[in-house]
Image 1 (tube, helix red, strand yellow):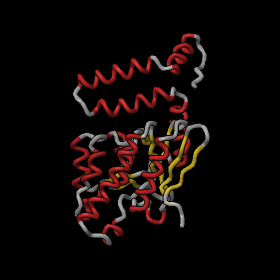
Image 2 (cartoon, rainbow, N blue to C red):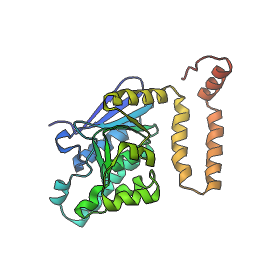
Image 3 (cartoon, helix red, strand yellow):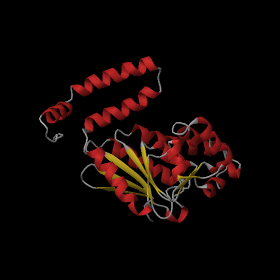
Image 4 (cartoon, rainbow, N blue to C red):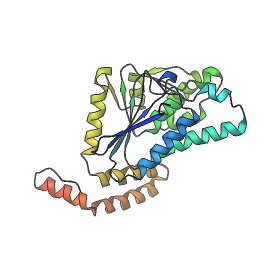
Length: 257
């Protein structure tokens, strides 16, 4: 049986996770969700990890949930467990201590679009298209709406949810769902450049910073500043931060531990 998730490590801090159901446009079956969660949980414990790149095999990034599998298991209890499992995956991406980059080609629909929204960064080919299209089969994409509405302005997100229409990469970038658009033939290069830029930074600062970035968004402004001040003060006491400042003052490249 082909592995549903393929994970590779370049030995320099970058891990690639590939959704591997190309014949099903990488639809998120129950088994794939379980495999993806297992990989993310394992990565979270890796102190050498610096950046993760998430992509899809074949012609698409991810076509969302596996509707045929869902139809074969029609019960309220099953659907509650399925969407809870999907939520665990999305939350594991946010909780991962390093940046996760979505490398998007083809389509990213419904829970596939949710995956893009859950990632910290997203680079897309010019030909990529995005939709939360459950409404086209009578299902409002409620769980994808959580990630989508945290990336895209409210009225734009709701428009996507109630129309099910696709938006192209240019619109997705304009609305804030993705960071960068690139021709298909340079997608790998664009992702490699972003990943390497992240790897070149102080890893401790990135880890502290990602955790703080999401924590401060969920609390009132005064509490956000309190959290940020504490994280920044501790960051300043970090050995790597000291090295970075010393290197800047000496006009040399820092050497991170």
